[in-house]
Image 1: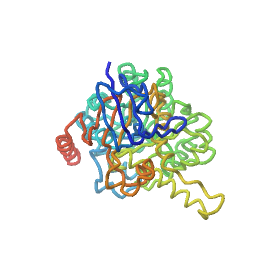
Image 2: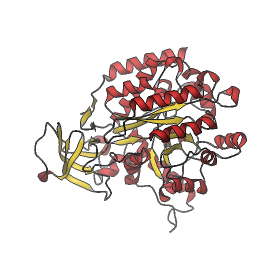
Image 3: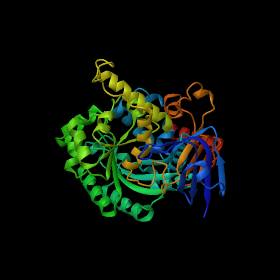
Image 4: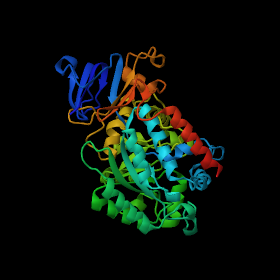
Length: 461
């Protein structure tokens, strides 16, 4: 049994049901779970490991609900810098066809390193192409070395260009192979227990890259084993046009026809959804991964997230792939979510001073989406807030820094409103992943060199 004591924290933001903020407080953890939290004097004064976090703000670990780790290898490529989604994909698919198992391993560790340094403790990744012998196992092995929680999505593409899909035939698989591998991964790796560091998700890529039959079969398989379902949906207007032309339905209605709605389903993006479609999400308990930076980068649009919150839709945050974000900074994504939502409110409101002007997203709301919201989207009850019985997942930032000068009247707001910074400490299950700003599991300099070599090789093929 191991214990960890966080003491003298200037502010602990619990994100619990009462939204308690605890000043000059402490957290006592045992075997990866929070055993006590509250006033310093009421908690044990010793532990196997003690961290004095005077002058620090402590927050629940951020939860990334949508990513494509492999895309860290293809950031900011000239041919994809100024393209919308479909043209961006068309340019990048042939490059990604050169991915190897080593590339999957390397890119996974790079993405998780970035995430950990930005306060993220749990990440869901959507790997949907497996060229040259690549497997989801390559990602799982890499993530295990990083010590973070992973929801590994067994993505898939089965609808190639020859069948009317968007991806080239060289990066699609047969449906029998996809389903057999999906079942293998669930049986080998999926851990549903509290504190789990690895869960498997079934995630056909999108309506324009898989068949309806694969969607139905994946849903049946997932529900047989009690795992979650994930896909991209309603990201662009082009997708609306594609679905109407090919399936005779808009994306959300198409999902309904395939039994792809329920509290075990979450969709990435959902930018182009109307009121009736959001009501479908709310009624069936579907979740949404909001990806503001990617949506801006690809000029996809602004998701109506304040409307979603008002309807009670489960809403999480995702950095999305690093070829459509060019970074994996979760705290930056929290800030982007707040600012983009405010821009959308300004567009909709004729006058900000009018009594019926749309409400502006607050810093606390943005952080809640990235913590409690992300946990709800992933179907987790053991993460997302700092409470007794939940996982000891949190990050801490030293408030005595130039970035926050003049902003300490409200430290929580400073974390979101001010320039995004790196975490000074990131803790997952009571284990330090980042300590004093330094990543512990791998050497950053060596990782960067290895990653750049893999990137050059991939791009030059």
